Image 1 (tube, rainbow, N blue to C red):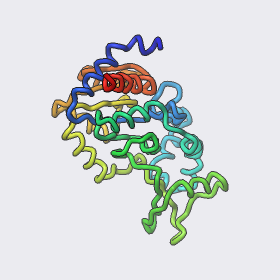
Image 2: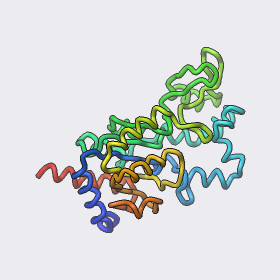
Image 3: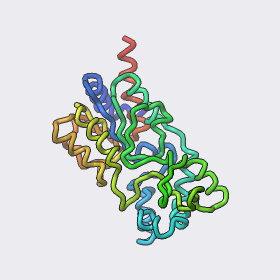
Length: 265
Protein backbone atom coordinates (compact mmCIF):
# COMPACT_ATOMS: atom_id res chain seq x y z
CA UNK A 1 0.00 0.00 0.00
CA UNK A 2 2.84 2.39 0.81
CA UNK A 3 4.25 2.01 -2.70
CA UNK A 4 0.90 2.87 -4.27
CA UNK A 5 0.47 5.96 -2.08
CA UNK A 6 3.90 7.22 -3.11
CA UNK A 7 2.83 7.14 -6.77
CA UNK A 8 -0.85 8.10 -6.55
CA UNK A 9 -0.49 11.18 -8.77
CA UNK A 10 1.33 9.30 -11.53
CA UNK A 11 -1.12 6.39 -11.42
CA UNK A 12 -4.09 8.73 -11.66
CA UNK A 13 -2.45 10.59 -14.55
CA UNK A 14 -1.90 7.32 -16.41
CA UNK A 15 -5.52 6.32 -15.86
CA UNK A 16 -6.68 9.72 -17.12
CA UNK A 17 -4.60 9.40 -20.28
CA UNK A 18 -6.05 5.96 -21.03
CA UNK A 19 -9.58 7.14 -20.26
CA UNK A 20 -9.30 9.94 -22.79
CA UNK A 21 -7.45 7.93 -25.41
CA UNK A 22 -8.95 7.10 -28.78
CA UNK A 23 -6.50 4.29 -29.52
CA UNK A 24 -3.99 3.11 -26.92
CA UNK A 25 -1.44 0.35 -27.38
CA UNK A 26 0.65 -1.44 -24.73
CA UNK A 27 4.32 -2.28 -25.32
CA UNK A 28 5.76 -4.79 -22.85
CA UNK A 29 9.15 -6.23 -22.03
CA UNK A 30 10.73 -8.90 -19.86
CA UNK A 31 10.00 -6.98 -16.66
CA UNK A 32 6.33 -7.83 -17.06
CA UNK A 33 7.03 -11.50 -16.34
CA UNK A 34 9.55 -11.26 -13.50
CA UNK A 35 6.77 -11.57 -10.92
CA UNK A 36 5.85 -14.83 -12.65
CA UNK A 37 9.34 -16.17 -11.93
CA UNK A 38 10.86 -15.57 -15.36
CA UNK A 39 14.12 -13.57 -15.14
CA UNK A 40 14.47 -10.39 -17.13
CA UNK A 41 17.54 -9.52 -19.18
CA UNK A 42 19.11 -6.55 -17.45
CA UNK A 43 17.71 -6.44 -13.91
CA UNK A 44 20.39 -5.62 -11.30
CA UNK A 45 21.79 -8.76 -9.74
CA UNK A 46 19.35 -11.12 -11.43
CA UNK A 47 19.14 -10.25 -15.12
CA UNK A 48 19.75 -13.10 -17.54
CA UNK A 49 22.42 -11.32 -19.57
CA UNK A 50 24.19 -10.12 -16.44
CA UNK A 51 24.50 -13.69 -15.22
CA UNK A 52 25.64 -14.97 -18.60
CA UNK A 53 28.25 -12.20 -18.84
CA UNK A 54 29.52 -13.10 -15.38
CA UNK A 55 29.94 -16.69 -16.57
CA UNK A 56 32.08 -15.60 -19.52
CA UNK A 57 31.86 -14.76 -23.20
CA UNK A 58 31.11 -18.36 -24.17
CA UNK A 59 27.89 -18.32 -22.16
CA UNK A 60 26.76 -15.05 -23.74
CA UNK A 61 27.33 -16.47 -27.23
CA UNK A 62 25.58 -19.73 -26.36
CA UNK A 63 22.17 -18.16 -26.84
CA UNK A 64 22.75 -16.92 -30.41
CA UNK A 65 21.35 -18.40 -33.60
CA UNK A 66 24.91 -19.20 -34.69
CA UNK A 67 25.43 -21.27 -31.54
CA UNK A 68 22.17 -23.10 -32.13
CA UNK A 69 23.24 -23.99 -35.64
CA UNK A 70 26.61 -25.31 -34.46
CA UNK A 71 25.40 -27.31 -31.46
CA UNK A 72 21.66 -27.33 -30.78
CA UNK A 73 22.06 -29.88 -27.98
CA UNK A 74 24.34 -27.49 -26.09
CA UNK A 75 21.85 -24.68 -26.67
CA UNK A 76 19.06 -26.70 -25.06
CA UNK A 77 21.29 -27.61 -22.14
CA UNK A 78 22.20 -23.96 -21.46
CA UNK A 79 18.59 -22.82 -21.83
CA UNK A 80 17.18 -25.63 -19.68
CA UNK A 81 16.97 -23.58 -16.44
CA UNK A 82 15.05 -20.85 -18.26
CA UNK A 83 12.74 -23.35 -19.96
CA UNK A 84 12.01 -24.91 -16.57
CA UNK A 85 10.96 -21.54 -15.19
CA UNK A 86 8.78 -20.70 -18.18
CA UNK A 87 6.75 -23.92 -18.17
CA UNK A 88 5.70 -23.46 -14.53
CA UNK A 89 5.10 -19.71 -14.80
CA UNK A 90 1.60 -18.32 -14.37
CA UNK A 91 0.32 -14.91 -15.49
CA UNK A 92 0.70 -12.26 -12.78
CA UNK A 93 -1.44 -9.27 -11.90
CA UNK A 94 0.21 -7.11 -14.58
CA UNK A 95 -0.82 -9.56 -17.32
CA UNK A 96 -4.37 -9.73 -15.99
CA UNK A 97 -4.60 -5.94 -15.75
CA UNK A 98 -3.65 -5.56 -19.41
CA UNK A 99 -6.16 -8.26 -20.33
CA UNK A 100 -8.85 -6.32 -18.51
CA UNK A 101 -7.84 -3.01 -20.09
CA UNK A 102 -8.15 -4.57 -23.53
CA UNK A 103 -11.49 -6.21 -22.73
CA UNK A 104 -12.86 -2.85 -21.53
CA UNK A 105 -11.59 -1.07 -24.65
CA UNK A 106 -8.91 1.07 -22.99
CA UNK A 107 -6.15 -0.52 -25.06
CA UNK A 108 -6.47 -2.06 -28.50
CA UNK A 109 -3.45 -4.37 -28.59
CA UNK A 110 -0.36 -5.55 -26.74
CA UNK A 111 2.97 -5.49 -28.53
CA UNK A 112 5.33 -7.66 -26.52
CA UNK A 113 8.99 -8.59 -26.61
CA UNK A 114 8.17 -11.67 -24.51
CA UNK A 115 7.75 -15.17 -25.91
CA UNK A 116 6.20 -16.78 -22.80
CA UNK A 117 2.54 -16.50 -23.95
CA UNK A 118 1.44 -15.22 -20.53
CA UNK A 119 -0.44 -12.29 -22.07
CA UNK A 120 -2.73 -14.66 -23.95
CA UNK A 121 -3.27 -16.81 -20.87
CA UNK A 122 -4.31 -13.68 -18.95
CA UNK A 123 -7.00 -12.80 -21.47
CA UNK A 124 -5.28 -10.50 -23.97
CA UNK A 125 -6.66 -11.23 -27.44
CA UNK A 126 -4.70 -8.96 -29.79
CA UNK A 127 -1.08 -9.82 -28.96
CA UNK A 128 1.76 -9.06 -31.36
CA UNK A 129 4.89 -11.03 -30.43
CA UNK A 130 7.79 -9.20 -32.06
CA UNK A 131 10.41 -11.55 -30.58
CA UNK A 132 8.58 -14.72 -31.49
CA UNK A 133 6.78 -17.27 -29.33
CA UNK A 134 7.37 -20.55 -27.56
CA UNK A 135 4.07 -21.84 -28.89
CA UNK A 136 5.79 -23.69 -31.73
CA UNK A 137 9.17 -24.95 -32.90
CA UNK A 138 10.43 -25.27 -36.46
CA UNK A 139 12.82 -27.79 -37.97
CA UNK A 140 15.95 -26.03 -39.20
CA UNK A 141 16.22 -28.48 -42.12
CA UNK A 142 12.75 -29.08 -43.55
CA UNK A 143 10.97 -26.13 -41.86
CA UNK A 144 8.04 -28.16 -40.59
CA UNK A 145 6.50 -26.65 -37.46
CA UNK A 146 5.23 -28.47 -34.39
CA UNK A 147 3.69 -27.47 -31.08
CA UNK A 148 6.68 -26.81 -28.83
CA UNK A 149 5.34 -27.78 -25.40
CA UNK A 150 5.25 -31.58 -25.98
CA UNK A 151 8.77 -31.39 -27.45
CA UNK A 152 9.99 -29.38 -24.47
CA UNK A 153 8.36 -31.73 -21.96
CA UNK A 154 10.09 -34.68 -23.61
CA UNK A 155 13.44 -32.88 -23.56
CA UNK A 156 13.08 -32.02 -19.87
CA UNK A 157 12.27 -35.68 -19.18
CA UNK A 158 15.08 -37.34 -21.12
CA UNK A 159 17.60 -34.56 -21.87
CA UNK A 160 17.63 -35.35 -25.60
CA UNK A 161 17.30 -32.40 -27.93
CA UNK A 162 13.99 -32.40 -29.87
CA UNK A 163 14.33 -33.56 -33.47
CA UNK A 164 11.96 -33.47 -36.42
CA UNK A 165 10.14 -36.77 -36.83
CA UNK A 166 10.09 -36.37 -40.60
CA UNK A 167 13.73 -35.55 -41.37
CA UNK A 168 15.65 -35.71 -38.09
CA UNK A 169 16.63 -32.03 -38.07
CA UNK A 170 16.92 -30.01 -34.89
CA UNK A 171 13.70 -28.33 -33.73
CA UNK A 172 14.31 -24.68 -32.92
CA UNK A 173 11.82 -22.82 -30.70
CA UNK A 174 10.11 -20.05 -32.64
CA UNK A 175 11.75 -17.30 -30.61
CA UNK A 176 14.03 -14.71 -32.14
CA UNK A 177 17.58 -15.41 -30.98
CA UNK A 178 20.43 -12.87 -31.07
CA UNK A 179 21.73 -12.84 -34.64
CA UNK A 180 18.28 -13.43 -36.19
CA UNK A 181 16.11 -10.85 -37.89
CA UNK A 182 12.76 -10.03 -36.34
CA UNK A 183 9.69 -11.41 -38.07
CA UNK A 184 8.70 -9.04 -40.86
CA UNK A 185 5.04 -9.99 -40.40
CA UNK A 186 5.08 -9.23 -36.67
CA UNK A 187 6.94 -5.95 -37.14
CA UNK A 188 4.53 -4.80 -39.84
CA UNK A 189 1.59 -5.60 -37.58
CA UNK A 190 3.25 -3.73 -34.72
CA UNK A 191 3.99 -0.70 -36.87
CA UNK A 192 0.42 -0.65 -38.12
CA UNK A 193 -0.88 -0.70 -34.55
CA UNK A 194 1.55 2.02 -33.48
CA UNK A 195 0.60 4.17 -36.47
CA UNK A 196 -2.96 4.49 -35.16
CA UNK A 197 -2.04 4.91 -31.48
CA UNK A 198 -2.42 8.18 -29.63
CA UNK A 199 -1.16 6.61 -26.38
CA UNK A 200 1.63 4.09 -25.90
CA UNK A 201 1.70 2.35 -22.52
CA UNK A 202 5.26 1.06 -22.06
CA UNK A 203 5.58 -1.49 -19.26
CA UNK A 204 8.36 -3.67 -17.94
CA UNK A 205 11.20 -2.59 -20.18
CA UNK A 206 14.15 -0.24 -19.77
CA UNK A 207 14.22 0.39 -23.55
CA UNK A 208 17.95 -0.28 -23.40
CA UNK A 209 18.19 -1.64 -26.92
CA UNK A 210 17.04 -4.16 -29.47
CA UNK A 211 15.41 -3.73 -32.87
CA UNK A 212 11.87 -3.70 -31.46
CA UNK A 213 12.55 -0.49 -29.55
CA UNK A 214 12.51 1.36 -32.88
CA UNK A 215 8.73 1.10 -32.48
CA UNK A 216 9.00 3.50 -29.55
CA UNK A 217 10.80 5.97 -31.77
CA UNK A 218 7.97 5.70 -34.29
CA UNK A 219 5.39 6.49 -31.62
CA UNK A 220 7.41 9.41 -30.30
CA UNK A 221 8.00 10.94 -33.73
CA UNK A 222 4.28 10.84 -34.55
CA UNK A 223 3.53 12.58 -31.22
CA UNK A 224 1.90 9.63 -29.49
CA UNK A 225 1.76 10.33 -25.76
CA UNK A 226 3.82 7.96 -23.62
CA UNK A 227 3.04 6.29 -20.29
CA UNK A 228 6.04 4.45 -18.81
CA UNK A 229 5.79 1.90 -15.99
CA UNK A 230 9.11 0.40 -14.95
CA UNK A 231 11.08 -0.06 -11.76
CA UNK A 232 14.15 1.69 -13.17
CA UNK A 233 14.58 4.78 -15.39
CA UNK A 234 14.31 4.42 -19.17
CA UNK A 235 15.73 6.39 -22.07
CA UNK A 236 12.31 7.91 -22.83
CA UNK A 237 11.31 9.12 -19.36
CA UNK A 238 11.85 12.79 -20.19
CA UNK A 239 9.43 12.49 -23.12
CA UNK A 240 6.64 10.71 -21.25
CA UNK A 241 3.44 12.26 -19.88
CA UNK A 242 3.38 9.81 -16.95
CA UNK A 243 6.32 7.88 -15.49
CA UNK A 244 5.71 5.37 -12.71
CA UNK A 245 8.77 3.80 -11.07
CA UNK A 246 7.01 0.75 -9.70
CA UNK A 247 6.69 -2.97 -10.15
CA UNK A 248 4.28 -3.41 -13.06
CA UNK A 249 2.44 -6.09 -11.06
CA UNK A 250 1.37 -3.35 -8.63
CA UNK A 251 1.08 -0.31 -10.92
CA UNK A 252 -0.96 -1.75 -13.79
CA UNK A 253 -3.66 -3.25 -11.52
CA UNK A 254 -3.86 0.11 -9.73
CA UNK A 255 -4.51 1.85 -13.06
CA UNK A 256 -7.12 -0.77 -13.98
CA UNK A 257 -8.78 -0.36 -10.55
CA UNK A 258 -9.27 3.39 -11.09
CA UNK A 259 -10.81 2.88 -14.52
CA UNK A 260 -13.03 0.05 -13.25
CA UNK A 261 -14.37 2.18 -10.39
CA UNK A 262 -15.06 5.07 -12.73
CA UNK A 263 -17.21 2.85 -14.95
CA UNK A 264 -19.36 1.94 -11.94
CA UNK A 265 -20.30 5.56 -11.22
